[in-house]
Length: 465
Image (cartoon, rainbow, N blue to C red):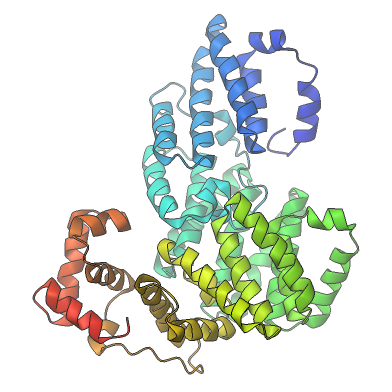
């Protein structure tokens, strides 16, 4: 029932069970606790978990099952609360038990019903990339050989993370693994995002002839297997984004007409991904005032919910809307705020995928020097990548030839050396071992033809990076 999104029915059923009955059936408490947890009602979920814990000893035959289910559910709830260490503690504890695995994860209960890009969902810490980098590699070690549905989420989250950080060589394994595990449980919460990241990757690499194949494949699978309607809506919205890229105005206008037929309260309750697509459509059709109104509402909403990825995208789109209205001060402030939020987390594609206009805005911000040193270094790195993506643009960041040879990670390590951080501090900041940092430092010295940190910093200061 949970997998089929029958929450309304489950809530109706729950009203028929009084507390005395729930006390006798701790497994039922856990089922209803999952119902609340998946709807972000964590207090109600915790109350039911307590009830199950207090009464599970009265039913010895289900004791082991209940113990592992409670451990896994608590791990999930702590993940939603972004308590990474506590979440990992609970999940690690669960694999020491018999049975090791939760039935809810085995059947592939959907953990991201409201977000087409998993990296922005609560299960991926709402877009805090540094926390994702900390949590999911450790989770994979805990449940490496289990084949569980949650591992499918780990794979799609890592695939989206590597896409966002523009590290495409890492993508192949994780996309394939997500598709394999998603198919095992027919979990559309994994399958649809996996096909979407595959499409975005092909688009970023300009593989136009292959672009539509993943969309056609997942659309057919959704039709055959009767996927939940919100995934069909997400695919429709993503299709609109591709149509705008291809300037297929008629199709875009048809989608908009359908969307605007909805009652206003219904349109406002649509998922964030659809409403961000609607804002993009308004920008595409030069309906700037409608775009600004919608994006201002989304900006407030994403701030309240602390959904970082969506918040950055909203600010980037809002900066474009203001720019089109010739409100240059407001546009500059929005793009600056997007940079302030994105820089500590290392976002890349969220800017690159927006095209040359955003590149120009970042260049203007860079030239204005209205940011901190760290943010300016971050913008410079983005602009170096944008030079390659959009060669026709007149964006030139002065970098010494030696610095140009550095990989992104080496440039990141060098920037932190420039801030005066020790190897241990760099390792902590980038979630690496000290040994790995030492290897990077050695490679940087070799490429810059320097012997120590002071000489490396001089090279750094000589360039605009």
